[in-house]
Image 1 (tube, rainbow, N blue to C red):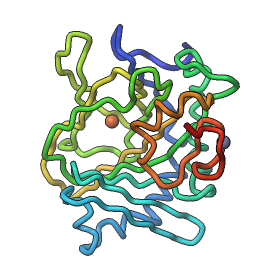
Image 2: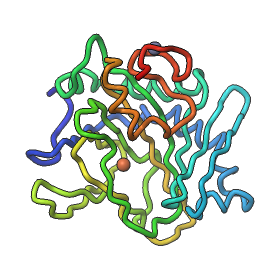
Image 3: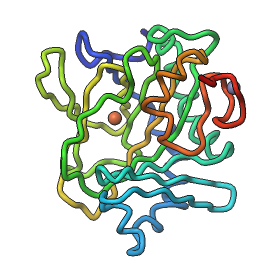
Length: 241
Ligand SMILES: [Fe+2]
Ligand SMILES: [Zn+2]
């Protein structure tokens, strides 16, 4: 491994540090097109976490899809067109971790980036333990703070090999990357005025045969998504079950 550091032996989770300039484009995107809007009173209901939400936001050539599952007060704001996806994706290209990821997944030619998100919250009132992937999915999730977190903002709780609960402290300019078998939850935190904004990606194998397993958890997280075959979801038959 060139850049990734396993967080502890036996766990399918790694960290990587990076230069803060890699975040510039996405910080500007968030500040210019989303921050003011999300702080409007009319959008407060989005952060309540009590109802399922699916809305589109369009700002000139940028397009986002906003999802909340109604199970926790978190907004998943995904890129919703090729232009927005490409701007997000350049972060992953510059991060230069794909050679390391190739040591972790079964792939054919390259690692595909499926989906890009801002994950935004103002509070977390419960522990929602889960794995992002079914075993053998050959997919990974990356999470890193887009802006410095408040001291009160929740970190990442996870279970070690013996199922003991531990905490990974999010750091500016460090990303955590994890795959199947890594059980985790956002650490609960009280309501804050400062938005907690994380940058997140899902990525992994380019083999269509794994889509069946991948889609069990990431198939409906967004509207716009690139499949393992490299095509936009809904435009091809490569990954059809
Ligand atoms: Fe997760
Ligand atoms: Zn395809």
